Length: 372
Image 1 (cartoon, rainbow, N blue to C red):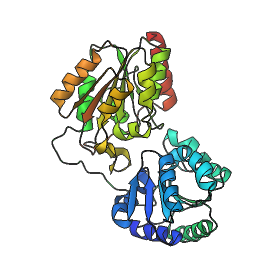
Image 2: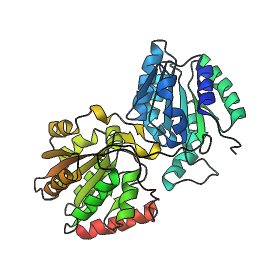
Image 3: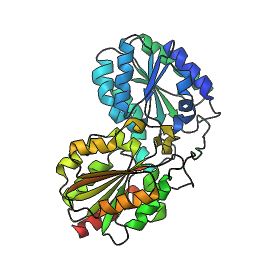
């Protein structure tokens, strides 16, 4: 039971004490860790924004091999992505790391459906791969965790701090300024343009799916929860199983970067036209608007190199309307990329999908079977 909030500064001081010093931190954001993540750029010499958790572990392990004290942050939903390099790299080479893990779905607490199974399994997974762990929920447990982590690292073993909901005080993300449209404006445009088209939208986890459902809930659509980055691959499977279902993939920059390889298979195996919309706001809005790495990425160039029949980028609603209309009318088999440049931040609060994942899945499956 959390009895008080931890300050980000005292939490980071504990990280430094556990490792002796902190030279590098790498990771993928979690909303439970947002107050600490906000100041990392000023707290550590090197802060590496990673596109997936396995990458973060590998970067931190590489730095540790050169004598740098390294830590990794992630949400426990991404622990599966980290297991391979934790076992076959860090443990095998004797590279100790401190893992700071947002503990979603902790047993005995209320959380979203996608976090329940991994929440129940988190401590068992860490036990199975030989990573010690401590739940950090107040100042007293932080002191104990610091000592336990220091001992583990001294022995050449990794250690995880599991940070549940409410340990840090929750922050509100303010909309960013600028002339770019916000995400919701683009989704409202897509909802309008789809009228007259017999198609289904599969929307990525995070804000995009939740906003689409709040604008226009349809049986033919699927609003993903969890499985970050997997929407293009899911859409490929749907298109192969139900080729008469015309699909729009509603993606985000952070999600696509986590599974960038999905573009290769989508281009190679898609046998029908698929509109692949990427709303690129340069941030992970659902976890606190931490920056993504999309600013240096040429999504169009990548798409063309792997075989997308058409690509385009828009930075206004007028250009987006033209681009989306062209893509929705495309007849060439394969994915057609529409990158929509947006500003970060939520404009209006958005709730969770009204139906649970299983009800959503059954509804969508029935629609796809009828179409196919």
